[in-house]
Length: 301
Image (cartoon, rainbow, N blue to C red):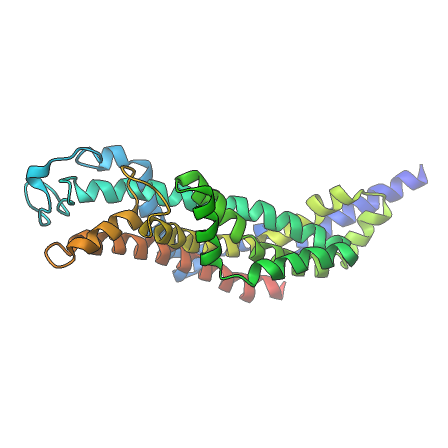
């Protein structure tokens, strides 16, 4: 009975230490205090609303061609941003392009996060030869230019949204692995981790219940910044003809075809470029704000 009471006491101490540790729950309370987070969040929210409510916001069918109205200037014949070379409404194409960009960004970042966080947890917790193998593999991946590696993967797999997501997910996981490993190395030496081992908690419970929650704050920062990188990468691949294929709407594809008419219809390249800039700016400001809050407030706790 005495041993059981001791286990209960240690478990309570473990939970108490876990709550005090600088995890993801701590900095969410401070997000609204940052102007960077607020402004970036507004930009991201606008893009998300446009993507979700695209059928309501858009004024035309994104796939309907009308060669009689091709290359119209903005505000002509009811087309807010003009039309493209096939007479399709540019505003509608850009709105639907937000869906593609956010889908690719979210899923590819999620895939990178799962791979990187898992390998980082294993590497940091177990150490030794396993840590050496994982980190050397990270070094090998980082030795290649990331975008060129993504282009090579998409070229091998073939163009299309699924292959773009897979390629981006397989090249951007290294940052998560390194960040999580560094945090695990520090966290696993904390008293509450030692207390969890004392009461007989298995490695799975310690890693995913005690360590992982306290690694999520930097992971959220990396993921937020990574969304902007993934969106730019998708636009780059589509611009090169390796990404999203017609007739699907993609900002990179629209911008690439607009370059052919840059003199007579510069709006075909300007507006997709602005859409990419606004979206990436929003995610970057959001990520920078979260990182600043993490550095300035959580590290003092």
